[in-house]
Length: 85
Image 1 (spheres, one colour):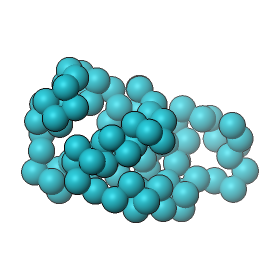
Image 2 (image 1 turned 90 degrees about the vertical axis):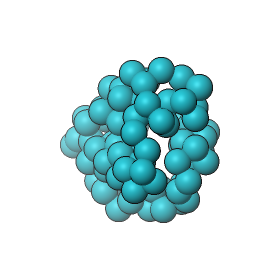
Image 3 (image 1 turned 120 degrees about the horizontal axis):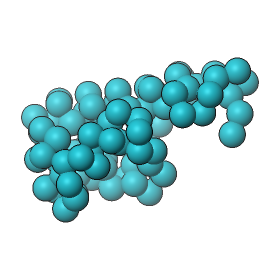
Image 4 (image 1 turned 45 degrees about the vertical axis):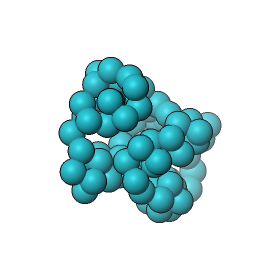
């Protein structure tokens, strides 16, 4: 059974966020400016050090310009069937 912090689903979420940001042509600082936060927070989210909840996913989706349901589908596909909370 996978650990929660570095599970396949969590890794997929972080990678999807990075991919979406890059596809939008944004650097971490650009995204941080849109979110009115420090670049270090964006870096911690993208590295998986700082986990996000579903509301924060929606905020990130709006700031970057992606469909949060597409990211959830990626995470769902990557999450092991026996993953525990």
